Length: 134
View 1 (cartoon, rainbow, N blue to C red):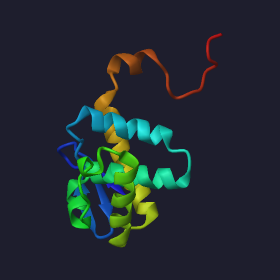
View 2 (spheres, helix red, strand yellow; view 1 turned 45 degrees about the horizontal axis):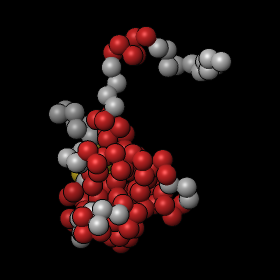
View 3 (tube, one colour; view 1 turned 45 degrees about the vertical axis):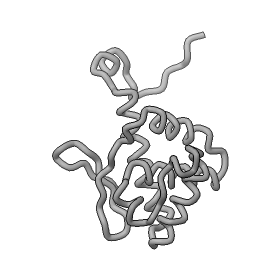
View 4 (cartoon, helix red, strand yellow; view 1 turned 180 degrees about the horizontal axis):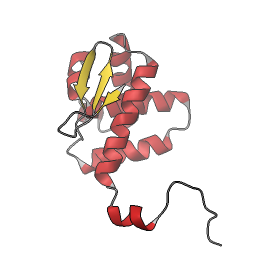
């Protein structure tokens, strides 16, 4: 479950706790998360990217689960994500909760890297599909 408190920062609820989502400071880490989601081709890699996303964006959860840093895995996102996912699941958090919370974090990173602008929204109608130009 996700919520947006009055300060605009999203939160996620996992188990009985609610955590603030924090965008990673590193542009490389943010961009790695975005490309990692696009590269996830099967359920194992998807679960691992969920784990990495949560561990990077919800540091309080990562600390509670005992997850090490991404750097301690030589910046290997899939290995880091596997261990983060295992640690988070080991605390009783369900896959459905993880998936929902990771999606909130992913969206927050996307909007941080590629903000929506009023100009684009005013010029385009995203409410209906249109044929691609040929």
